[in-house]
Length: 191
Image 1: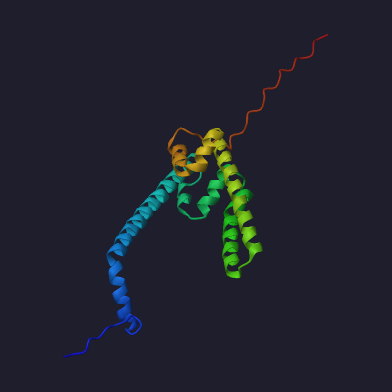
Image 2: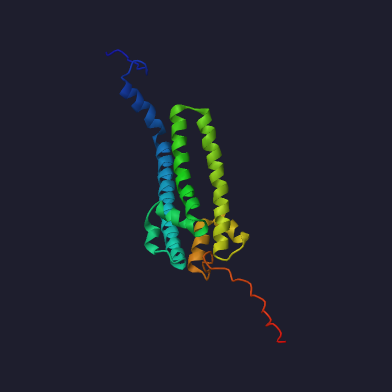
């Protein structure tokens, strides 16, 4: 008769121990991974759809502002043109380059484990949020809308950009303000 043998996890080979432990939780883990894959797929589809809608909105907005529409397809340059709709070129350049600089600082803060750089990154990010709000207000005014429209641009940007691009809004930033009519001068009385 053969002797009775018991196996303990500490005496088994590591691969066998892992296999025995993982098979018990396999059905639950597989269900969670399936749901995670569905969530990621839906997020990707919605993300790509948002990119397409934003590009389409920019295309029509540029057409209204008499900017060549193909510029909506060029990354970073389209952001520069978006900001140029509301501000002068200098602010537009700062608005495009500042997030890149702040993002680089954020990466350095993680690598250097520096509290000062992390604080500067946080302050820079808050500054960019304020600049974004001001940009939305100026953009809504550039197309003849009030501050309520700016709130829509802040929170539902893609939808309101589409409404500007496809709606009846006209780009008014470059229109010259009419000078007040001069009072007619009276001819000197003949003596």
